[in-house]
Length: 292
Image (cartoon, rainbow, N blue to C red; front, top):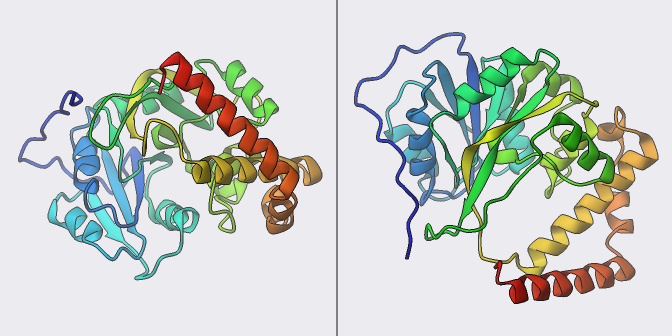
């Protein structure tokens, strides 16, 4: 088994905690006790020290919140409501509790590379028109075995082209955005349980405002070498429904339009059959290529 190169170990001394950090990292955690410690440690060794981490413990039944607290770093704040509210609502609570004007997303089972936050801030400084940025990601299996590198657009024009095609161009776990942009957009749609990140980025998009980075920002953990059928189906039917809602009511008002009717229409037998055929074909193709 090949393990990824370990991330740097943080020093014992803590940097001063700012009341107005340059960037707030938010993390929604639900039963992530096996991974949250490493995810937080990867943030605590960032090359840019002026940040905070807001962890929202989303009603975990394990020790996720306790592990975050036991790191005993003043840059980490753990909040929660004592019950599960879902990823969209959990992240929204964390963002509204954050103190910085720039918000970075981190998942509790992924790792951030040491220069990630520094890179986000540099892109925003160089591009005042930018509302969203991100770093590239690499992927590993849960046991640490390297998987295929996942490449995302490296120019704003390429991001715009993917949005127009109705595809996700932003790696959520390696992304950052301006807090004002998030609040103006209405934030995550809490009625969406899958692809809520795509809904946010698609609904609040404006041409030329999503400026990507080219360096790797995060190491993303995938469940297996190829997605399960259920994972594929849930993602594709939700993505279809999100795009249908945008086409029906436009981007600015999309968050205020009920989502369930669009999901129901895009979950019928015909769509299910098409996606099953696509799933089998793509899986066969990648198996023959030896890419999974």
